[in-house]
Length: 229
Image 1 (cartoon, one colour):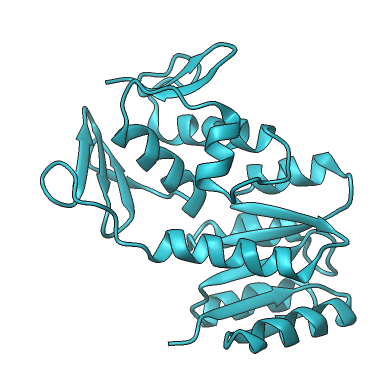
Image 2 (cartoon, rainbow, N blue to C red; image 1 turned 30 degrees about the vertical axis):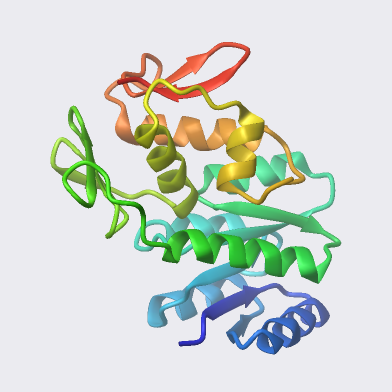
C-alpha cells in the first residue's frame, strides 16, 4: 500500500516540487497551504508522515504540530529557515520528530522520510516476554509501539519511542549524542546535537516522576546518556 504523506507549505512552488518527487516514489500525497487546512486534513485522514513548514498563514507550524500531538503520534518533519536554530529547537519541543532546513535538497527530504518510515514500520526483535520491555513502572509494547508508566499510556513521538527503546534494550550502555543521532536519525545526520538533548528532556518529562532527578534515563556527564538498570 502506498505511503500517504501530507505536505504543508504556503510556497506553492515548494509544495509542487515535493509533491512531484514523492509521487515518483509511488507515495500518495496531499497538500495544504495554511495551518488550518493542514489541521483539518490531519483530523479527517490517516497519514504516514507530515512535512510541516514553520511559517504558515492562519496557524503557525508550531501551533499545528502542538495540536496534532494532542490526538496523534504521526511522524512530523518540520521545515525551518536556514540557520534559525530557535525554530529547530522549538519544533522539537512541540513534538516534531525531525527537521530540515531550507533551502533543501529533495534527495535529503526523501532520505529523511524513508528513514522515519522504516523505523515506524519495522518489527522489533523479540525482547523479554516476547513483545514488551518492563523496567519498574515503565512498560514498552514493542509491536504496538506504545509506552506505559504505572499502567497509564503516555504519548511518545516516533523518535522519542525509538530513543527510549534503544536505551532500555541496552541498559547501562552509554550512548554519545553523535551515536544516538546516527542510530535513531539518519547516519551522518547533519544537524545540531541539541536535537538529542531536547528529545531526552521531553522523554524525562513524560516518563520520570521527577525529571530533574531521573530514575530511568541518566546522564554521564561529558559522555552521553544511558538507561539505568
